Structure formats: structure tokens, C-alpha cells
Image 1 (cartoon, rainbow, N blue to C red):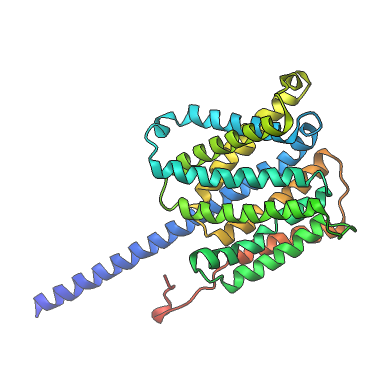
Image 2 (tube, rainbow, N blue to C red; image 1 turned 180 degrees about the vertical axis):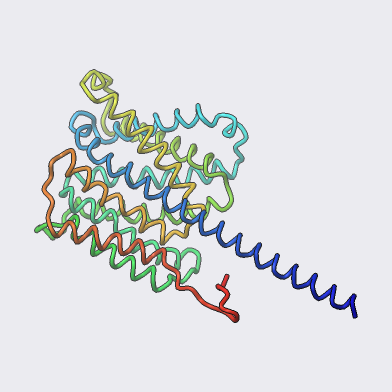
Length: 325
């Protein structure tokens, strides 16, 4: 009888230990998701500030060469920092980096040239339509049916973006079409990042991504805009702007995005990344003295609501009031 009681006690203790282990694992998983979400929001702060830098830089540097400079600085910076990891890059990591790097270049290229033919507000709004495209692309590519909360959050985010970005001109022109291509490519880029970060190193993936985007930018710039004019770097503020776009906006920004997406689904990541427009507005108000309106504040409120909804998971309760795994 004593032996049977001892066995029962040991099983009870083992059961409690197992539950404690599962609870700790859940807490760790929740903390990782929180840190990943924070990293993506940090990215949007960096990218939002880059709007101000880009506005001053694009007046003296042609779009293709500006992309070439920023991605080259990012690629060189990552090579110096992570050379020991790069030396062991596998063929698969190389191939994955080529794919996401090409998608990144195409996205930025169409966004930059779309801006030449449409307004900045419409360019920003149409680009961030990837928020609503990503859940459906997940369904198409990976057979992952979008959750109702993700779709609702995407719709709320799009309405918020419209309030932030759109003014009176709702007509469609050639620049809008180019920007739409950019938005679709950004959505596909997010989907492929989610896929590839499950199987390859985020650092190696980011290095190859920056290198590929830089190479394609140089080829395009030389083919379409002629020889490189380095005299632009003699103008005040240009070297600092290029370094900021390369090291902060490109190298650090895309490294944080790639690492963050390893622990978040693509639909949630797309909504968090769309906060770029919110921080772009904040920095424009602070540094470019753009006016603040109630419509903009309402748009920001809807964006924050969308992010909360995307991250919210209704808790289910099981017997004994224990939280569901």
C-alpha cells in the first residue's frame, strides 16, 4: 500500500513539473513574440525617420544611385560585422538571399519611380496596402487560412492609413500603378521572409539580401542613368544621409525585420511594419513642420487598434481553470 502511495505521489509531482515546464515554455514563447513585435516597431521608427532623410537626399541624388549607395553601405557594414558567419554560408542560404534581395530591390525601385508621377501621400498609402494583401497571399502560397482577427485588423489598418495619407486627390495615374506593383512585391517579400527564416540564418539572409539589392541597384543605375557622379558627396549633409540610410535604415532595419519575422506570422508582421507611415508622420511633424489634423490623429488611433487586435488571442479555459496551451 505504501509503495502504491509513493508511486501516486511521484506521478503527481511529475505532473506538476510537466505543467510548470509547459507554463514556462508558454511564458518564454510569449516573451519572444513580445520582443519580436518590439523589434518590428523599432524598424518602423527607423524607417519613419528615413522619410525625412530621403526627402532631402532625393533632390541631389538620382533614385537608382541613392538605392545603390544605401544598399552598398548596408552590405559592406554587415560583411565587416558578420564575416565569420558569412564564410560558412550554404548554397541554400545564398539562394534564399537572392530571392528576397531581388524582391526588395523591385519593391524600392517601383516605389521610388512611382513617387515621381504621384503624390507622396498616395505613394505611402498604396505601398502599405501590403497589410491587406499578406493574409491572402499566405492563403495562396501556404494554404494558411487567415484568422478573422487578422482580416479585421488589416481592414482597420487600411482605413487608418487612408486617414493618415490620403487627401483630396483619389484619381488613379501611372505613378499609382507603379506604386501598386511595389506594394504587391513588399507583400510577397514578407511572405518569403517568413518562409526562409524558418530554415536559414537571419543574419546570412540579411547579408545576401543587402548584397543582391545593391548589385541590382548598381546595374540598373548604370544602365538607365549613366555614369556615377561622386561630386554629390561634396554637398553638405549628403554623406551623413547616405550613411544613415545605409547603416540604420537598411542594415539595422532589415536585420531587425528578418530576425523579428522568425517569431511572428506574416499577417501580424505586415500590420506592425505598416506603422512606418505613423512614425513617418510624427517625424514629418517634428522636423518638416507639417500640420497635425484630427483626421491624422484618428488614423493613428485606428493603426494602434489594428496592431492590438492582430496580437490579441482570446484565451480558452480548460478543466480546473487552467489556461489552454
